[in-house]
Image 1 (cartoon, helix red, strand yellow):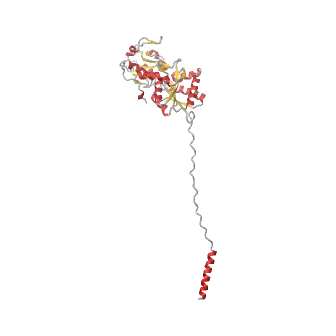
Image 2 (cartoon, rainbow, N blue to C red):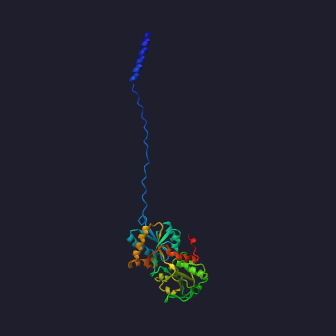
Image 3 (cartoon, rainbow, N blue to C red):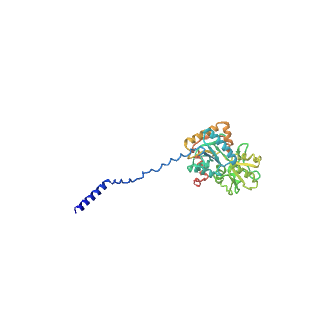
Length: 337
């Protein structure tokens, strides 16, 4: 029995010694991923500025004359503006006055040579503000004329030598009752709105007109219509016959001026879209006035397609009297808003 207890004690002692000699296991550390932060995206580049190669200013011209002439003249004016201001400017000619207005509102044009009625509509829509009005022979208002083919049987009551009408509008224009007119554009002051208003106020009813786009085209249509083939008469600014004299040297013999109004229509404008900054408008206006101050610059403006003889800075109030007149001939602004 004594031997058994000695063996048991030795076994316990050996077990304790073995436990003391065995190294303690070190716990494996748990590696946790360090929190990561999403990389910050670089800020977007600033948008290009107006008047740069990436964002040129677009100068839109009213399609009231020959498109090729307008583009050539407009590009020459744009090049001179670029020289004076450092701004990159491109030129375009929209298809009609409505497209010209919408170009000013859609960002497709920043400088617009807008006819008066087109400007009034564009301003009412919040698309543009006037900067200048064009001058012809020192005047900022102009007249319109009714024309007819010399062989169409109408009597011409305008005397080009004296510059006066021999009878009033009722007698002169009464001969157009039941006849077909040639009109330029529904928003042309001298090519439709005011002459049609004259006829309406006088109670002279005509056939539906032919929309031929552009004053030179009205003159050409009348020239080619001795028997009313296209239209019986037309209305244009004074004197649009010169616009086709190069191709039709006898135009003054074949197309007669029947009657001329007084000068009540404001000349065309230089207007800026609402997105053009004020300082840039000032820079462009100053440059255009500088162009108009020299004989070379005036020739550029004259060759631009509108026979411009100068520029004058105006504000929107310049058109208030014409707005009243348009309302008197039942021009409805709501049709265009």
